[in-house]
Amino acid sequence: MEEVIKYFESLEERIATLEAELASLEAEMDELKNRPEPEPQVVEKVVEKIVEVEKPVEVIKEVVKEVVKEPEPVAEPVVEEPVKEEPVVEAEPQPEAKEEPAEQASPKAAVYGKPVDDIRLAISLGDRFLYQRELFDQNAELMQRTLTDINELGSYEEAIMYIGKHFQWDTESKTYQQFLVTLHRRFG
Image (cartoon, rainbow, N blue to C red; front, side, top):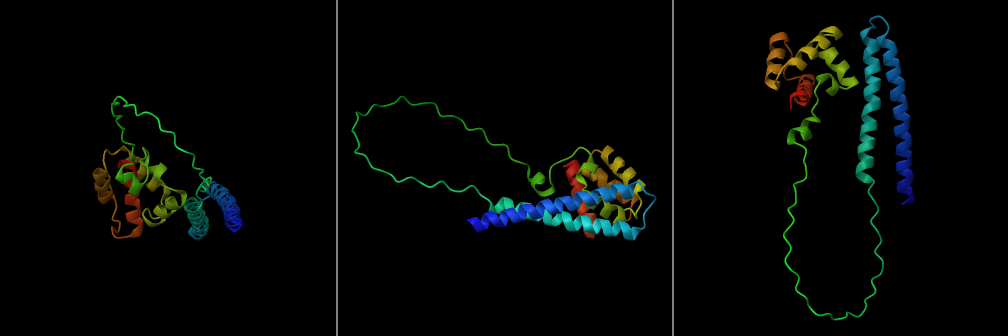
């Protein structure tokens, strides 16, 4: 058991280290945002570092959640006592309590994630750079304008039509498919 505890403590230390690295990289990103347009190679390197740090942190957190469980209580020895016979008294029937169904997340939320009112809230920093690079040809202004327009639309279908009208994206690409998942979070 001590080995398991030490293992998870080392995982927590690693998470803390990775989170510190992520904070450092995010500070570096903020500094880069205030500079004139950086060269694409610099942005790619920073994005790669962020992705390197974000993925292991999430994986480690998931592993810790799955593996760390509450210890099962140890049952105390049962000492049998002689049973006293008591007269049987019939109780009046009680009305059955109706159980209210527990709220469940919608199947779409389980697949696409929690719905959002603003599509920009559904896009992580790493995905923001990925979409900007692969879908919007490094044009941050075009991406922001497009996201604002998409937010004003009323449905997922309208968003797909908008994208088809304004862009010639490869619908088979992994990035495009990932963007569609983001759209689902916005329009459920």
